[in-house]
Amino acid sequence: MLIFENIISDRGSRYAVSGGACANADDAAAFLKALKRKKKFAKATHNTWACLTADGPLKNDDGESGAGMVILRMLERDDVRDEIVVVTRWYGGKHLGGDRFRHVQDAVRYYLDNRQ
Image (cartoon, rainbow, N blue to C red; front, side):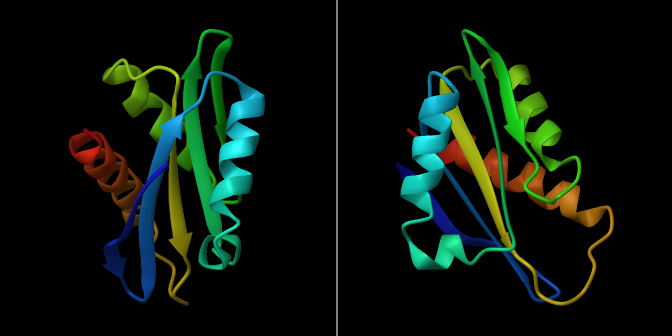
């Protein structure tokens, strides 16, 4: 499990991105469970994620409507398979509007650029 914390901050909201191996829905559930063992991530407002597996795409917005699809499209574009990417947001009290999608993209790009 690779975690990059405090990579983006905007109007009080803070973002982290994490990822690791994921071949199926059970792996995704296990990854999220392990991530949420860290109290900080368990208390996050959103843990949005996506993964491309041999069985097909998996994603979950976790209340951040549309964010899972943003992650999934980036994974498809870079042909990243069998690897889950989770973008975590701690809500800071102010709505970010469309900027939240840019932040999700920036977080995923950060992960993809720094994972090796």
